[in-house]
Image (cartoon, rainbow, N blue to C red; front, side, top):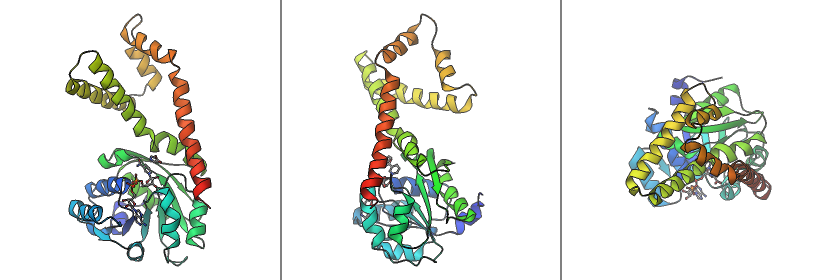
Length: 280
Ligand SMILES: NC(=O)C1=CN([C@@H]2O[C@H](COP(=O)(O)OP(=O)(O)OC[C@H]3O[C@@H](n4cnc5c(N)ncnc54)[C@H](O)[C@@H]3O)[C@@H](O)[C@H]2O)C=CC1
Ligand SMILES: O=C(O)[C@@H]1CCC=N1
């Protein structure tokens, strides 16, 4: 299914919306050697538009239609609340062969198809912000009009900024959103809390931050590279009668498992709500 890198290099890829997520993806694509000339962005905020041009040397547009006319792949990177107005203002023929790649949380492919009019090739992607450092994790879903070649192209774009995983049912994208789309925020929050707790224990802030970040990085790398699962890796740290055991017990006393279940459920439900509210 995967296209060669050369095929991606030949495609013109345009982002509608040049905010945080688009910047992450554009940054990753530029680092992966994609020629800046093949990348476009349309962004109404002049300062942001200029910064994208200065930082990456890509083509910038104030007008979404100019971008759509210029690109084979149109990445929809505006807020979910803005998507309907943006799409319904576009003029594009149903047989133009373009691939629409949406990263908007919660908006379903059938809503997009209705707004675009006619049968369209739509891939729904849920990336995350570590894409900026090419360590993203993206869930992908393709509607039935997407060809194998287009699937390969969408996957190649997102793979330039990290790992990609396809799901076969669109409903699973809400779980992907709750897990890896929003997930970096959960880990950052844990980092903030660990740093603050260590400062209370007497460490200088800089020392606490450095040790926190390297510990998070090391734990993730160990879990990715070693065959043992995270539960076993946790047990490996936890000496009987030692320090970790006390910390783990304190977390369990506050039912941290249930807290995470509730957190992911809330994010999942919000993705569904967004689809119902905004998909009309
Ligand atoms: N931030 C995140 O971690 C993730 C965000 N997403 C999705 O990515 C999308 C973008 O999110 P962010 O980058 O965080 O938002 P953002 O607010 O940083 O970026 C949105 C950009 O769209 C621009 N914009 C507004 N109206 C426009 C229009 N009519 N035409 C063209 N551009 C317009 C805004 O000026 C802004 O620069 C959202 O749909 C969100 O659900 C997906 C995965 C992760
Ligand atoms: O919070 C949000 O709605 C977006 C989607 C996943 C991450 N950020």
